[in-house]
Amino acid sequence: MSGTGRGVAVAAATTCAAVILTFGSGCANGPKLHVSGTGAPKAGQGSASASAQPAADGVQQIVIDTLDGEHFKPDVVFAHPGKLRITITNLSVLPHNFEVPTLGVRSETIFAGHSTTVTFDVATAGSYSFDCGFHQHDGMTGQLIVS
Image (tube, rainbow, N blue to C red; front, top):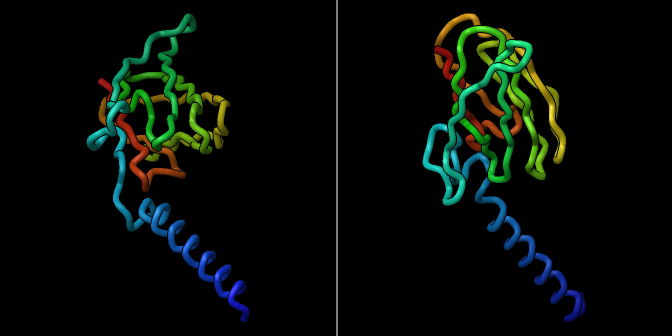
């Protein structure tokens, strides 16, 4: 290999190593940056709570945003037993979804700049975890508190 060829190979290897060091730390074995609803928020991305409000048709409703940094806002939702309508708006660049596993609720994939709505019944008071199925491992979770 010529001197120029070795220089290109070394530069490519160095670039690859820098990419792995920069982006690899956020993988499954790396540190968690934010655990929405259950851990300390990053600066400027505090946990938020909100209560579902009755709509004109009597169904409780709330809007939850998905944000960059893999978290929901609000990530704590208060509601009463009964029918609940949640509109999830993706303000992030990543695709997300919304799940309440113990209630069998799962939205479609929500791409950047789009929204979807899920409507379901919550018959029993209690605390129900919700998450993004794509980013739950990054801490994109929250709590639905029904009382």
